[in-house]
Length: 291
Length: 205
Image 1 (cartoon, rainbow over the protein chains, first blue to last red):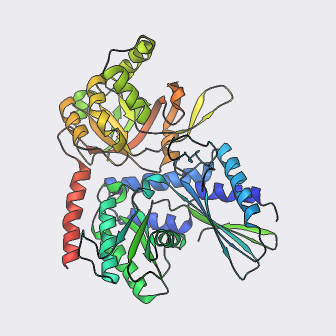
Image 2: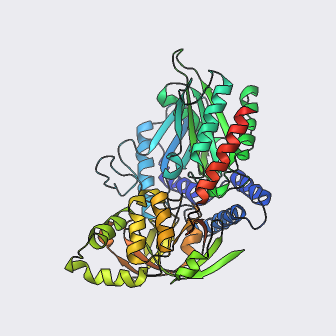
Image 3: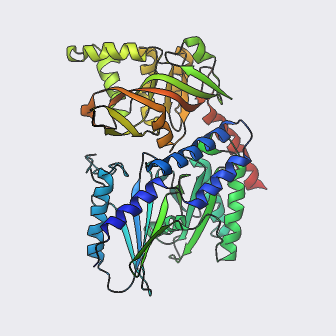
């Protein structure tokens, strides 16, 4: 197993300090759309200035560098154990270099591990693929936004929701309303439809790796993504909850099989920074790109 | 479109602000999160002040009168000359300090609290009673806000840990928005009400 620790450190630094172009474009468009001189427009200007300053100085975009979530697509024969060790070492180095804040605390005692490693921290998902290259995706998801995520079981006692796409729509609208601006709006919603309690959330988070401007290959989901994007923005919650035209930058949905008795809809709320990058290693060449 | 405000802030200035006002804040302020608020309440507000804390109490009383507490757990670096500099300094979610804030505002004569996500009725009432405001910083603007910190003047209670200590910082043009004012108005409540009305329309339509 090749030692890619230093490249992993680069991936971490890039994800933490360099905003993805699709996100920057969406924030720029949102800034232009807001009322001149409004607090909403002011907030987006501060965000865009911050993005530029972070990129230039190599400093974290946000001081909450979040939970590191790694997704690895690899060919047959790659050692998951060895890669996991390298990832943990890379996190330690990135923490020392202040690209990451020490963010792993023991659940009960609250004691900070100091180096962003701990029990099931970071999270790493491996997928073996029929390919020669190694692709490592990293998402940094902060606490404020994570606390705005939720899971519904439909039909719900809270609101009338049928077990269909309209029921899903109601759940997502409810989640977006409850989140207000607390997840550092304008946010991105990743929705998991189906699954069990665990896989439903994971499917929702996977959606956050998609490029903001993409389409869903499923026409029904694609139409609903666009409808929800419009409707949630009509709520007028705005950047930081100051009131404004852009409350979400995108809504992305994914479906998975479920038990007949269960119908879970999971919403992962991602903050405006939407920090995720993919490192591709092919024939010794290393490339770090946005989705 | 922004009001420039310098610490110490007078009661008149604080009461002159209303929700939605954009502010550029300058002067010396203190960070304070969960451990700091608990310490202020337990050691000083509930009293009596322990002898060992008297010096810090006097210093905080001077600095917080007409002053500002910023809900922030910064990333800090120590320079070669021994001074500290702020690397990343975005706001943390304020709601955790809700049980304490009004009492801290009243006891110390704070004119503003800066954070993210707003606070609730007890703090809103405290703002009205004492003449203070809640200022919402832009979440995630960690580098920009760190750049507005021109000097780390001092740090107190470092034994709380770096994120939880009282960092005494001199800032220039720190951008924030009044989301709770001294007239009982909360932008968070207003936006919630308006968005709830909108949601009902969307579900009905």
